[in-house]
Amino acid sequence: MEENIRQSRHYALIAAAQSDTREAADAATETLLAENMGLVRSAALRFRDRGTEYEDLLQIGTIGMIRAIRSFDLSRGLAFSTYAVPLIVGEIRRHLRDDGPLHVSRTYKKLAAELSAKRREIAEREGREAGIEELAALCLVGREEAAAALAAVSPVTSLSDACFEEDKGELAERLTDDESAFEAEILNDKLALRAAIGRMPPLWRKILLLRYYRDRTQQQTADALGLTQVKISREEKKILDFLRGELIV
Image (cartoon, rainbow, N blue to C red; front, side, top):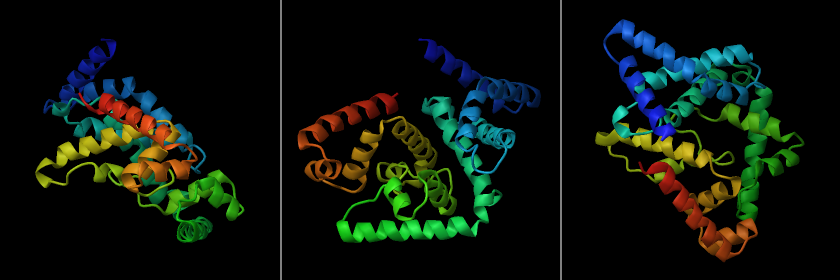
């Protein structure tokens, strides 16, 4: 009940922020920014070790929040935070890519190439995806450094972010139609799906990746994760129930 009241309040403020009345729109936008700065702070903290000051990250994230306020589709019934977080994170990542130190670092580009080469070698030789920790160990670097290098050379847009940290696959695109007439609805569905996947435990994300992106059978997935087929079947049912609860309004 409390969450419904909060969402109704956000909807009313967003409607005002998107109105043609300048004074009312500005006031509603300021209120929404103040009430949702926790989302911006949380996103900024994720990138505080990337060479940009935390205060600057907050300002950049706020730009993403404003974009979310202006583009949010009230007719979809989606929670505003679910829609806003990917835009906030995308704005920060875009800044780091275009203006931050990772954009010009030859060291990171070289390391990313080495990591990608190792990943391909393992995939071709053993038929599996190597994890970030394994790749980092092979290249004699830390996990965080390896992740930062791969992130630095990855294309960053609000619609093409990977659903999984260790994979470039866009599960959201595989689970939605690509009809241009429903582009706005598809966008919101993708954002909602990405946010829901982000809230899953690591095991569920791995199962989802193998089963629905890599088209593995339950037994193949079980073998890859060192589990039984029965365990995979049970977890898969939990995953589907979780997604239904998260995505069906």
